[in-house]
Length: 89
Image (cartoon, rainbow, N blue to C red; front, side, top):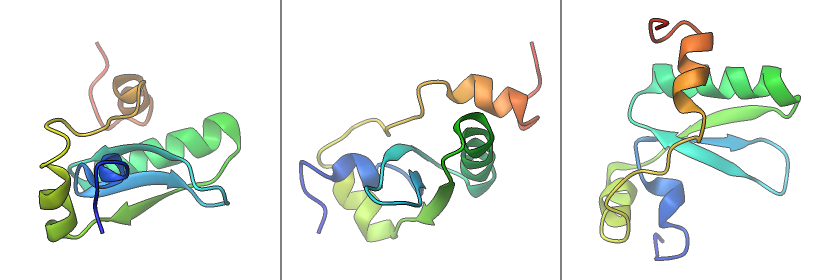
């Protein structure tokens, strides 16, 4: 059940999170390619294993009632450029 406290986890189609407990959600992405690139980048950068989890449409819609903007990884642009998903500047 999506609520005010956990809405950040469902704020877009794909959640990027650690595998091991305690699960740490690092951000959400709209498309799988970007989410997987960030997960791979993070796994290589800090040694923790990250995975991508697909959120249901109902959960994403419910999260929008609490969050107008998706939670993004703080260094998203850097990660996507490093993984060659986005062109470098």
